[in-house]
Structures are given as structure tokens and as C-alpha cells.
Length: 379
Image (cartoon, rainbow, N blue to C red; front, side, top):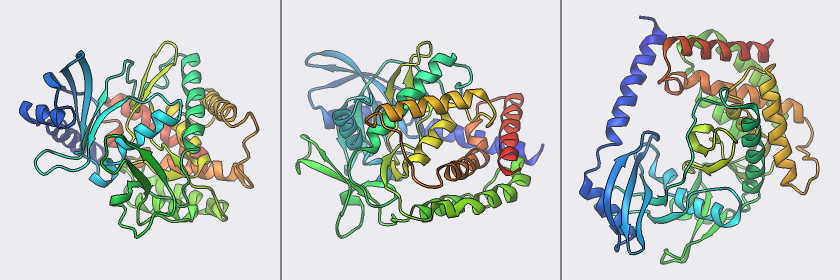
């Protein structure tokens, strides 16, 4: 067995443990969680969802207006501070943008007996097509990307943030004051609302934030890609000066991928954008490049599919921004090359987790795709 196989095997074991944990809630606990948010509702059926790292259950509930299906989500994988803002952010996004998000039925930030934080949302139709970007029809993926551009432009216009960091509830931020952020009206809250702001480690330097991301991957590359690490890091280091200067901090979605979308795979319609936990503030061009990586299936940089996704993303973003050309400022192309290199580190670090369900031939194909893409970047 190779080192890579041993790593993949360890991830298989980890995934099994997480899957088992996701199915651990006793029926009476699920019923009590729903009742905490909607006392007049009763649970008829509950089944663990197949997707998700946190505890996710599809529940059928009986309400005064008749039966309905909902999704119960509780914190298991994320830091509770990073999980807690999710339903409040979803409410703001649903009310202030056209981004299709499930309606939030109720949320519990803390509880002495139940596994809080948790929340309940409506169940939306559509399919999760994680890892299938290259299998969808060209017209469908272009529509997905065009809509992603529109939605990211709307998201970037929410709130007024001054620093780059993880988004937290104001009560969790451990800061004396909140100089920027987003206020979320919440009729269910005794205080009448929540403030979403950045965490105490946030910085007003985008370069510093990117350097922190890069540093977090040091020594973490999968064994398959150990020989690429020094060259890729050198390429990143040589481009960091493109981040000197000031950049606007915007509310972003750095996990805009098919695994977090409910879609119509034939038409490319986005039915719902899911998973708003662990949100952060970003530089907007970086957010678009990362969405391009995901929606192109991490295609090589000379793959026509990537250019179609990139063009559609840009078209959607411009259309939502008063139909004017988006000016990302000086060094736009250099920053794009830097962002491609920085984000390409992610699959090299998380290769085992991302391709856990693939067979060996599929893993080898994916590894070769990433390897060739890195070589193209550093040549």
C-alpha cells in the first residue's frame, strides 16, 4: 500500500465516523428540537440526509396547516461560533437578494439540554450534483455560472464590512465594538435582530488574509503532490505583491460549488444555494475565481469549459452591477494568476476528503488533472 493509499484509507475511516455521528440523534431529541422552534408541530418521520458534515435530518412534520417537509441542521463539524450565524445570514440573503435560499422556520443559538446551535428550514426541490460539473450539458453549466455571477454580485452588496475574516454573531465576536457588518432583522429574536460582524482575528489587510490561508496549507499537501509544493509556493510568493494596497471587504461565498446547490441538471436552473455556515468576508475578484474553479470542475487552464464558465460568471456579475464593466483595479490579471495558484492548493491538501467516494481510476484521473494544472501555472 502506498502512502497515498494509506491517506485515502484513513479518510475512509474518518468519513465513516462522521456518517455514523450524523445518524446519532434519538427520535425524541429530533422531536424536542423541532418543538423548541415550533411547539404546535409534531414530527411524523425523520431520516438522516446523505450529504453534509454537520447533523442534517430530513423531517416530515405535522403542522396546523397540514404536513410539510423540512430540514433540521445541527452543529457537529463546524466551530459553533462559525455555525451560529448561518440561519440569520440565510434570512438576510432571502429577504434582501434574489438568491434562492430555503426559508428558515426557526433557529436556536444556545440550549442547556439540546444539541444547539440548530435550526429548521424548508425543504427545496432540485438535485445535488457534487463533482459532476464536467458531466452537465454545456448550456446548463453556463446558466449555473451566469446565475452564480448575478448572485455573488448581490451578496457582495450586502452589509458594510471593513475587515477580512470569519463572519460571526456580534455576541460571539469577542470584540468591544462592532464597527462594521450586517444587521439582520429577526422577529423571533427577543432583541429584535442580530448583528453579523467579523471575528476578533479579522484584518483590514487582504494580503495578510491571503498569506494566512497559504500558511495554513504548509506541510499539508497530499503525498501524491509533495513534489509540486515548492514550485507552487514559489509561484504564490512571487505574486503576493499584487495584493499590496487597499481592497474592499465584501460578504462572500467561498464554497459556491455543486455540492452546496440544488439544481435542475438539464436546464441549469439553481433551485437553492445551501450551506452558509463558516461564511467570511473576501475580496470580490478572489470570490469569482474560486467560483470559477468549482463550477469548471477544477478544469485545466487551457480547457474551453473553464473559459465558458469564466465568461458566464463575468456576464452575470456585470449584469447585476449596473451593466458597467467591472474594474478590479490595477494588476487585475496578476491577481487572477495568483488566485488560481492559491486556490489550486486546496484540492492538493484536501484530495483524500474530496475524492473519498471515487474509485482508484477516478482518483488517478483527478490527480493528473490537478498535476497538469499546477505545472501550467508554474512553468
